Image: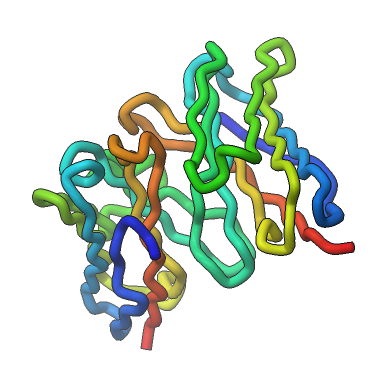
Length: 110
Length: 118
């Protein structure tokens, strides 16, 4: 069981906006910046968002992140077929003194 | 651009030691917390631990008794040793670099599959 809670699945049609939630606690999301990753089959996770809402170079602005209290969200607007992938949230946990991950959300583009 | 590349045996026998090395290029070994993360087939990501260039470490409590992470600053590389492996340690192992406080983008290697089997 993961320290961070994500819905196991999400879906949307092309062009729609979808959000994926990540719920944690005061020792992790409540204190530290959240990262979001996209993972395609057989590949390494790709960083989409760091420090709650910062996009690395090359990540389109239709992808955004936010945080409120002990929860965080990833939003993807203008959904495209290539967005179909697994998505993970991650954050440092001060109590565990380690990095924790959500269980992952499988996004399906219908 | 920081790049990381894992290397090591793809097959390890049960009860033996898994050893992997990650070579860092394009960046200073003193700039990041060098981290190992693994992903069992079909499952999620699990943080194994990190080492800072100074030598300070932190390990996942569930693996702490079996894990050692070391760094060789002269070779710009860091390593993972996991003792007494079982089939449950079969996974894709990723090396990654995270900056302090998560204030900058992190960087990941492509990952390497390690299978534990006799």
